[in-house]
Image (cartoon, rainbow, N blue to C red):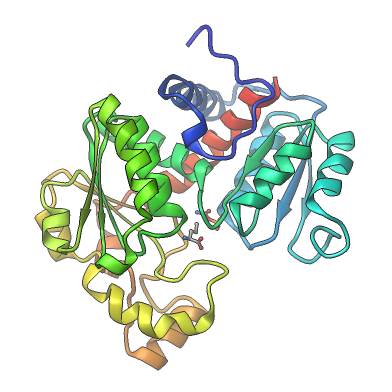
Length: 331
Ligand code: CP
Ligand code: NVA
């Protein structure tokens, strides 16, 4: 831990970091979480300024960045999906060069990974990926910390992801798990399996760390013996509204239910990056119910509200881990 220096680094995807560097983020987050709980001030970034660009909506990521920055003594500016010139009147390259004259760090949430990569290329200050279609690396740090807190270790943990395995969350899990020597199973029908080249890259990393990546179509087999059952929304931000009809049909067998939880290890936990469609408490949840008759989608309300569900510990850890990313890369 002593020799790890991440100052000035971008945080674009976990694949760019070594296992030791990822552990350094987690250890820092654990320390900062302890300070926060005990009320010990930790204004490590006093006087720094942070720009938060959100081209997609957010609750957790935005709030985590704002609270983390505040605790660290830094100032933030929030640029919402319509409130700036980005992409419409000003290129990403120009935006990066303007913002890096004013800010010490830039968070970006948006569509293609190439946009955040371009921002980082032209920025003189660290750029942090707050979610793209391809990756969600700050979510991964929170999830790893939550699993380590719960089980006491990461190496050898069996995690099964159910749902669309071609998008940011499943792809991120392949690499986060591979780096930490975990056994990751992606469970879906074949047409939702991840791109072959990504699987090969992740498998090569997993092999070095004693982990594995498995693709599975059978939900019961996928759940069997798992320590963590993980799922995500069936239709992600930026996907068309009319994707729901087909997606519901294809994803139905992969809904995380008590039956699947029972197939997992007796001490298994349920995790979800959130937001989740587990009841009728959302506009989209109600629309989907009226149109397709399904009142719970990727997870049943019973599982979501069960003792095995650690989703709110996970959500809290978004803040502590994002704080670690800001602190480690700025000072
Ligand atoms: N998990 C997550 O990224 O949540 P938000 O979309 O609310 O930021
Ligand atoms: N796959 C989801 C993750 C949300 C945190 C999305 O991109 O909408």
